[in-house]
Image 1 (cartoon, rainbow, N blue to C red):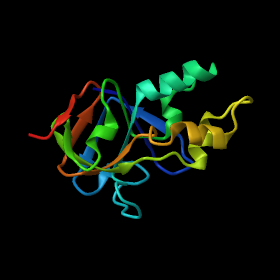
Image 2 (image 1 turned 60 degrees about the horizontal axis):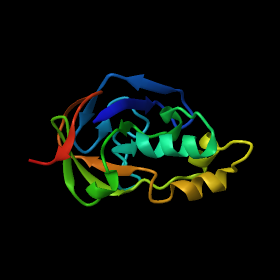
Image 3 (image 1 turned 180 degrees about the vertical axis):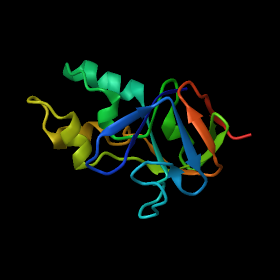
Length: 151
């Protein structure tokens, strides 16, 4: 299920939270910093499991909000790595998992603390930083949408 939805107008811009976003096939989320860009595989939309973030917070005594991860869709109850190379739906929108969304230094800096340096954060999230996906159909994605195998 989709628990939270985020976009940013620019890489350094303020994160905006949404209840519903419009997505365009081959382009991503309208109004997001990566909308219509094709610089990297799976740049249309990114997802991350809230459970991974919650586990990180519990292990390190932090209370980081999922918005700091810089991913568009925050899921609950979904094993995102299982969708790598496969089509799936979020609500009525079809996506294809393109590659793991490995953490970058900016991700590490956002979740770092006095006890945990950015490179340690990055290392912690290797293979757990989420999924990059291509948008295959146009539609809307809302908080509460179900994530499932493509029909």
